[in-house]
Image 1 (tube, helix red, strand yellow):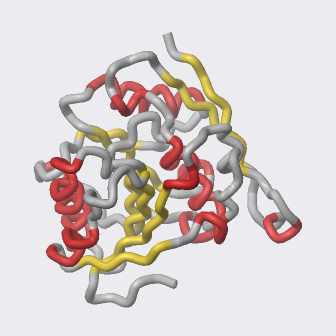
Image 2 (tube, one colour; image 1 turned 90 degrees about the vertical axis):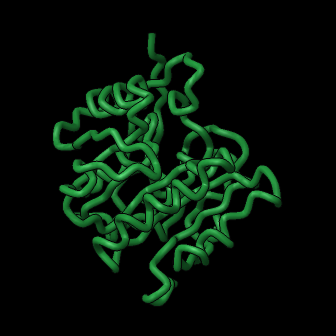
Image 3 (cartoon, one colour; image 1 turned 90 degrees about the horizontal axis):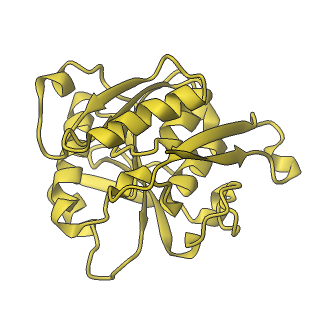
Length: 227
């Protein structure tokens, strides 16, 4: 049985009043799969999307390791054409992606099974993506290079593609910097305070742990990193 968590992304100051408020319902299920819960990284990434909502409107957006799909659902509500993906070996997570769409009355979002580091015909036939979303995909160090290889695959299809990433600092020995260099990728760090995600509520989520979360925008090294 799913329990539904409510998230609100709205103006916290007069500077934000030109942004559209977004409210999202996300089903969470008691299950051993990591992807069945909303982790703090998802709320931070969703807040970044809300803060930069003009940059996602009418764009092709794909979320990898979507799980409960909070970032992807926010992007869809802000006018993006969204594809939600998760591991083909985790069918319950893909089902939860669909339930998140149903809970928010979104019928235009596609769902697709993608396992990191495995390139399938369904991936090849996807249109070039403008923005990739990755929330806490850098959890298990054995998966890091497969995640980055998947990101690079989509960036090869569109050199202007950006990957918006949040990850939680769990160990100084688990950096992705050397892998980014290996795959000819660059990144720009965005402090949480720059998009109003440094408060305890993190965009109204009520989730703890934002002090140890990093927000990155990854691009191909051939283009200048975003500022």
